[in-house]
Image 1 (cartoon, rainbow, N blue to C red):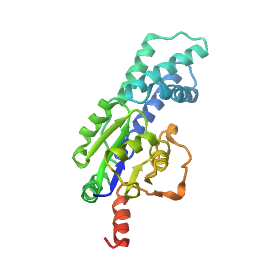
Image 2 (cartoon, rainbow, N blue to C red):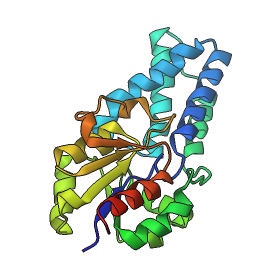
Image 3 (cartoon, one colour):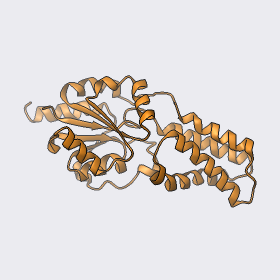
Image 4 (cartoon, one colour):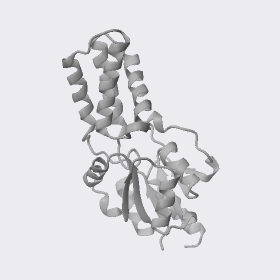
Length: 238
């Protein structure tokens, strides 16, 4: 059996967070135009996300709801009435992340064919299944993967389920992703290897300390996976 790479999608294969950040910045500008403090408005979005994500999960429609709730919270905080025209504009702003441009990250298109020749590739992403599968179809990368899994949350139990389902050997399995919280730490907890490819726009919700840094390889781009594993093959005489 080939060794296995379990690969994250958002901000590992394609850009995602930059579009949410752009919407939050636009929300701050909109709130400033209506008498609210811009920075406080952006912080309020973060507050709402931290509260709601554990309850309702991820997805662009939930993000749009978060913006609406943040606007209502700002109004309540300062005794202002919710203006329906503004509320509608906030809702429309949130819809901009529903189908953003598909921008593959550096090295992805070039590296995946080589990786597919040498590894079993499994895509593991979280969020709304329809949204994530649509992104994958739009990316043109679907044919490279031997399995695709969209889950509500990534934890060590999910990784153990994949190990059992595919009869994976943990010592020959690696998780590849940008998020310490959702990619790296749960993989380590399940006993598989981890390759961290940091993204400059990783969502603050995903940024936690890596539990065992000595077991993690850190790369600068997805394309560096080819060099990493090609060198390891040479070292093993394969």
